[in-house]
Length: 348
Image (cartoon, rainbow, N blue to C red):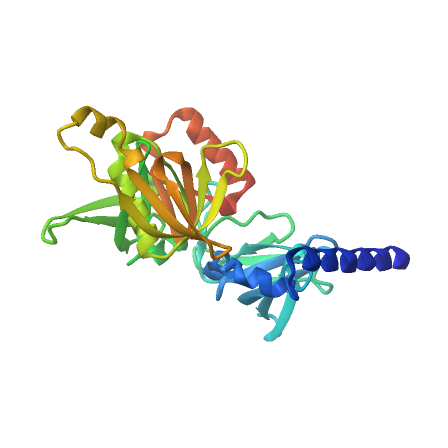
């Protein structure tokens, strides 16, 4: 085993040196920093996670404070965490640990049970297992094994949406709405969320109230297809939002190779056209628009909107969909996702 470790270390050294020579750089970590990769993880900072070592099942409970890049191609970066069991700062390699978010004091639904309040996380002596401690009806203690339990997303996540933009996907169209209120006064286990669309006339406002039980919520990762002429107004609203919020975005292009650009939308340019040519105006809407982006290599590129198939980005709310608009087959698919990957979806 020791000889194998030495060979791996030697291979890493050779690979790192070859990479530096190829790209004519002195530091891999500085290169990764220049790609603004940290932007992908900034929403995780100051949140609590349980970390599991994928090799020896060692568990840690900590708050992510930062990520630090390593001068090693095979490792990429490490997490800087505050260990919440001993209150000490630790550094753990991202390649060795999986993680899932936890929130003490929050409500969790397990299937059709009464929601439980997570009160504590306790590991065994060697930190290879342990228990979540929940309270049922605020008095009965319920223990669930960390190793055997797939912890779902807390429904209290929706409380963090208040005052932020959320993305409502309805009939193939992605709409940007502001969450003005989250209410649980009628039933503390079934929140309602109020969404508002601001029009050009500030006095004209539409408010929609939706119950959590009627929704499918996919936090953090948002994506939208591009190219439907009938949806171009909402597509432009989304692109303007990405530009104004300086959001790191993945642009998926309509070609078989080199079909992704990652960067920040800088400008949306609309070409002038003859208003009298109604037929052309309706047919070629996407051909009239060009996006200027600054990619992660700090190079400016112009991309015709007609060549983009999909845009994807991360945000600290998520995508909301109505269950009523989904087919029985789609609902079954969401239930399977909830069962297998409960940290990816809120579906009651």
